[in-house]
Image (cartoon, one colour):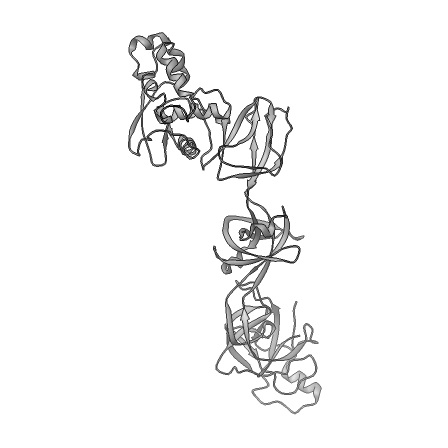
Length: 461
């Protein structure tokens, strides 16, 4: 919005005042009113510039009022709108084969080792980790991060997996487990199967059950036994174990067999990729997409984190005042409040296209955790407001932001409310340079040699 202010000469002529002094004859023209955009997202000011030119027309724009420089306490408290709900929503897809035979209830929580759903009565169980099951684990000596997930989870639920080779160890990848089983029809193999499928609570420790028999299968069996398996197996492949890798050892295969029996899967020692869903932690079933009897070919269900949090889309200019770990207050729909903390500041930037001109506002999702789970127990999803406590300054000099003038030569000033003036029009007082500090709730902290409490300055009405 453009605003022009009459020159000193024009105003004096209209009012019938005497000819102004040489200093007062200098014309000051208000070129425009601009918004002063700051990282705190608060405040607006006026842009002033000196210069001559023709006498402008009638004055338009905001009225001018006199305000006093006040000593006050300022706090950078800010409130933002967000959405309370379960975070980290993820869709679980079926493998494309079989029929869905069991599903959990919406809202159910599923922890490590518990089944999430069943297809053809074969359960799919939750394991914790960061690497998904992307292949069939059937070859002893195989190495990978997915195998580490299996080893860690079986150990966590109480199975002895034996010793895992250290990083840098060279291991040999042998023939697949099912090929070894078909090759061994002698009593020693039968003994191995019996031991491998025994309950962990019976006999010697689980890690010892079946290990001796397993070591005599595959590449370690005498040549006369391997000839019964048909064509000669592929020569053993040597693999070096890296940091974070797991190894499909005989001990781990035995543990898989015992675990399979406990969850109702045929104890073959072969783990299918569909047997496990890997999540970061326990999950909550947020939505069911199919019914029992449907083909397991599409989206089956959606899961989320079991704890609630607040997601806030924050403009990038406002992120400077938000830090991870910062304490906040969450204001709930019923008017109550609960504490929270900034958990994460997203790295994915999205443009929120709003307005007819299609201009995008760049925003980043900030996630706030809730301290008291009981305070939000009865809320699945709801809009909330979050109050961010900022810096507090006490006893500082402040004026309304509308009193700030941005000078053409740089810096800021306020105009003293001096001399005579007509209502709603600038009195033409001198400009006093100021240094700015905190901006909060429409006020700006100012300081300078000629700034004192109680002095009158001009501000937009």
